[in-house]
Length: 233
Image 1 (cartoon, helix red, strand yellow):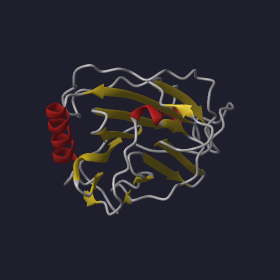
Image 2 (tube, rainbow, N blue to C red; image 1 turned 90 degrees about the horizontal axis):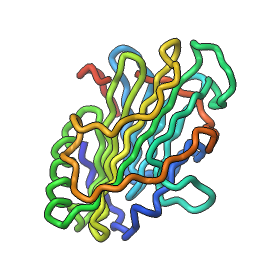
Image 3 (cartoon, rainbow, N blue to C red; image 1 turned 60 degrees about the vertical axis):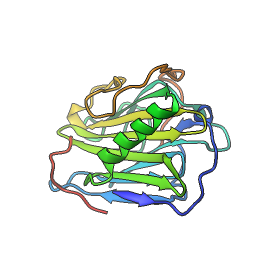
Image 4 (cartoon, helix red, strand yellow; image 1 turned 180 degrees about the vertical axis):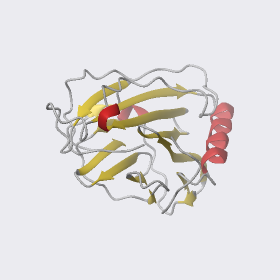
C-alpha cells in the first residue's frame, strides 16, 4: 500500500541509523496492521520517516524492531544480529513453546543518481499494491521512500525494508525474521536475499556487526512466509 506522506522530508544520513529491540512504539507517519487467514500473529508495519518500526504482537507481549535516526543510547545499525527470546523478551532458558528466535541483517548500497532512481522505482512497484506491504513517499521527493513488506512463514514471520537517502545516494536494506515455538532453535543471522528485492547496486558496504550478547530485547514474539492469503489494516 502506497501512502503519500504529508510531513516534509528531512535530510538525514544512513550513518545515523540505529537498531533496537528496546524502544516503545514511536509516533508514525503511516502504519499498516496485518493479520493472517490462519490466525497467525498480528504484525504492524510503521513508517517513522526515513526509518521504521515493526511490531510483532502475541498475548505474552510484543517484539518491537526499531531502525531509526533516534536520539539517546542506541546500537549503530548492525550487519547481523541473532537473539533467543522468551515470552517476556528475556534471553533466559525458556519453554520451547514460548521461545522465539529473532534474526536481523542489513546492508547499505551506495548508488549514482540514475541507479538510485531506478532502485526506488522497483521498490515502489514491489510494495505499492502488495497486500502485506507499506510504502511512504515524501512530498516533492519521489526518490525518498521508506518501504516495508511482510512474509508469512510456516515457522514464523519475516519482513524486509528499504530506506532511501537521495541526498546521500544510499539505499538501506534490512531483513528481519522471527521463528517461534518448537521450531525456534537459534535462527542465526540472515543472509541478504536477492530473490525478493531489487537488484543490488554497486559500491555496497555492510554495517558493523553486533555481538550476540549486546542489546537485550524486551518483548515477546511469535510469527510465521506469505501464503498469499490474509491481510488487514
